[in-house]
Image 1 (cartoon, one colour):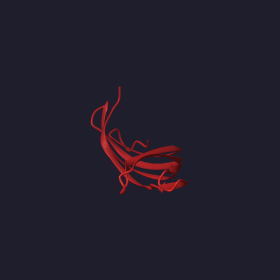
Image 2 (tube, rainbow, N blue to C red):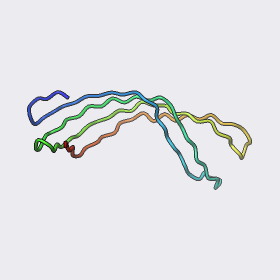
Image 3 (cartoon, rainbow, N blue to C red):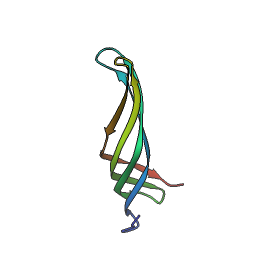
Image 4 (cartoon, rainbow, N blue to C red):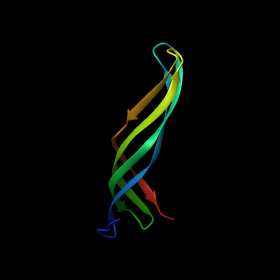
Length: 101
């Protein structure tokens, strides 16, 4: 956090970790599937908190996520193992209230 004043606090952050993705559904042939994907990912974020009182703040932030998760599974239709990866890089925007106790 970088306090500009007692009421405005911009912040920046970053992180690296392991990410999981569960995909469930039914394909075009009516077969149900459920696949777990995993892989390393990273995030960078920046935001601004406006303190409304000493314990309550209003915030908004943007987060960018970089990740490529992978899975290996057996395809019963073709009888072979399949390796699949999903690239789900992208932006997210969050906003809301922060409460301090």
